[in-house]
Amino acid sequence: MPSYAFPDRYVAAAAVLLTTVVLPPPAAAKRADAAKRHPAAKSTTGLNFSAAFPFDWCVADKKGKGPPSKFQIFLEESLVRVLIGEEPANWKVVAENYLDGYHIPIAHPALVRLLDYKRYEADIHDHWVWFEAPHREEPTDNWIVRLYSKIVQPMPGLSADDLRVWRYVFIYPNTILDIYPDQMNTWVIRPTGVDSSHDHYECYRPVHNSLRTRVAQRLNLRLNTIVAHEDIDLVRNVQTGLGTRDYECGPLSERDAALAWFADRIRGDLGL
Image (tube, rainbow, N blue to C red):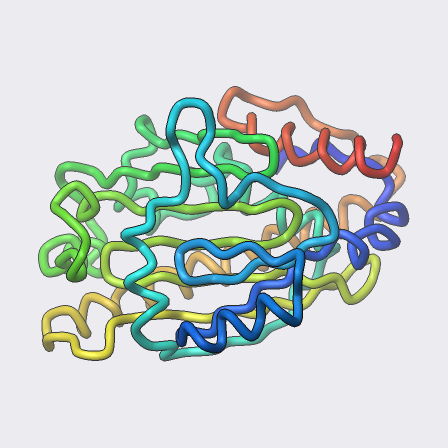
């Protein structure tokens, strides 16, 4: 994975100051209480965001594109799973890996059998990036992908337009939403050292699901667990490379516009 990088010692020092705090209480009363305790908080898709700097995630841009309110249905229903983990890399390396689209066909053989990489797009805003990852018309030779594509159905409140696409949102500097037709995940990357970081995942699903949907959700989890293990190996190798004298920043492709955006944002915030 190419890294549009700068010295990690700067990143580790600044990351704590830049952290975005996600507060996902499903009840309206809890959201109101959180807003009082965090006056800078903004709310969208059922989440409260509190940040140390202004950001436009909660406001539609000039083209009228903003966070679709219909996805709030996931967060008003049920928090079903909380996962925590550690990454063997600086938080910036983990974020870069998420934002980098170039490595997907090479590093994630199962995922690329689901997604139509030619139609993978990143819509870049000042403080967040919205990724559209449409599915292939005919998923190829992976049983998890084939079965998931066959049985997945859009949750109540979503439409057929939301069925054959996975959406990803990266909110600067370290907050992520994974929006699927059958569930929604939040992920916060917190720095714990120059070469380590902490992950906090939460998964939201409607309370009452059919057996068919529960199977699709299990397949979703299984596929994304495979992808997560592949990404951990990637970031570990990148972090090792950053520690060598021979490391050089690689060129960026058109697929890596979000990666360049992230690096430019960090450089600007640190005055580099």
